Length: 135
Image (tube, rainbow, N blue to C red):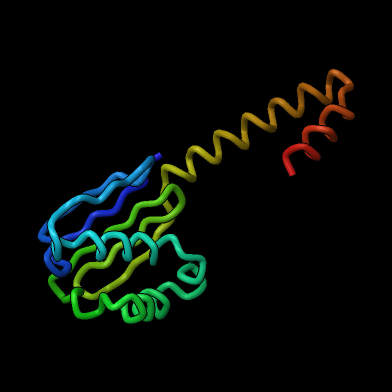
C-alpha cells in the first residue's frame, strides 16, 4: 500500500515526494530541510495527532518549531495506508484511503470464506485457536 509524504513550499523545500514504505535516509547540506521532513513525518505518525486533527496539527507545528516554515503557499500531503491528510491553502483535510478500505474488505471477505469452510468441516476448535493466536 502507498505510504508517502509530499511537501511543497515549506521552508527551504520547494518540492519533495518521499516514499515511506520502507527505510528513509535523509541526506543533504545544512539547512536544506532534512529536519523539517523528519518533524512532519513525526507529526503525522504521532498518536495525539489523530484525536483532534486540526488543532493538534497546528499545535504540533508550533511545538516542533515549524510554524514559521508553513505558509498559505505550502502544500503537504501525507498518504498513509489508512488516511490521506492534505494541507493546501491553509486548509487541512483528512479522508480515508480508499485503497485501504478495498484491501481491508478483501481480507475480511477472505477470512469469512475460510471460517465458513472450517465450520463446515467441524473444526471449531481450530477457529478458537486461530483467534487466540491472533489476539
